[in-house]
Length: 341
Image 1 (cartoon, one colour):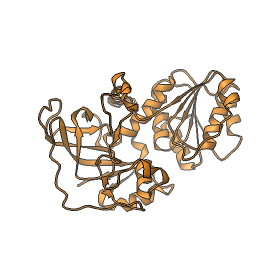
Image 2: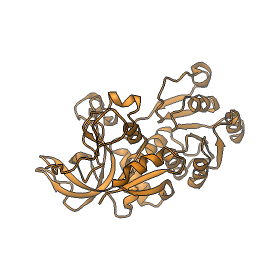
Image 3: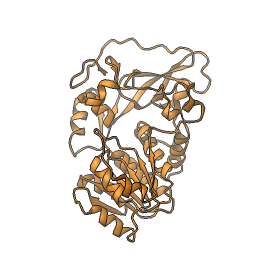
Image 4: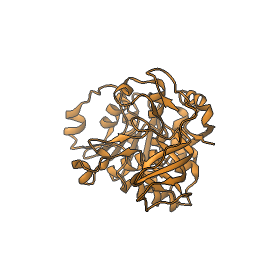
């Protein structure tokens, strides 16, 4: 599937030659591919896409598959091995890359946006980006290691152990973050969302309380549920300007906010009262720490500390991708995994 025009939908390209891996490259035969909000934005050609998506690119960035071929100098993976991969292709030479912060590489290329992605039979990656999948991890979960990594990065940035936690936005990544926070030793966990279904999922994933985001009084409820002090940690997963403001307002003094959600418009904040006077620490979170986050995810999954199957609501043949993106606009779907034959 390719994005060929700045309009709604994708184009299915037939008879595309199978890529040949060059030196240091790995060709993966895709078996499962996760669908995320970024893919939905590209499908609908949301306003932000014009500056971030190269027309003609094969879309998709969450996947699992088998190594089909390797180029020269590849030593870490072998043909037939089950793998996933990191979709941010860092340059390796800029200051962030050379100081262990490749996830914010200044010249990063992104799978499925500027580099051909995984909504296809095959995807080509540098060996450094290929992640061998442990036998204990199912194909469905291996296909969504990317968003699990986003959630892990957010939770670990905020140091949740023994602290009260507020999660604003209980979609797929928010629900996963709740499970990770619980596994990481968080105290009381409070979730907010506009969707009753998502709030039910939040409770299933380990939240202690689920608050309706349309209720303007929920920040006060969150403070009461934390003994009047306010949550120690805010994990902002929604990107909603209202939720961001309310989350920071409810945050306790000296608290930590980790912001992963992507607003589609500028956000006005009461910076003085909600950050400065509180002595709050605010972290912007992007992608995954390469590859510290991947090891953290694998350790929790293999150790049996994360049960993430409830977030997967649909498995759909890749040929029915239009149905998949239609479901994403409804309250019916959570995480959709495309099955590639």
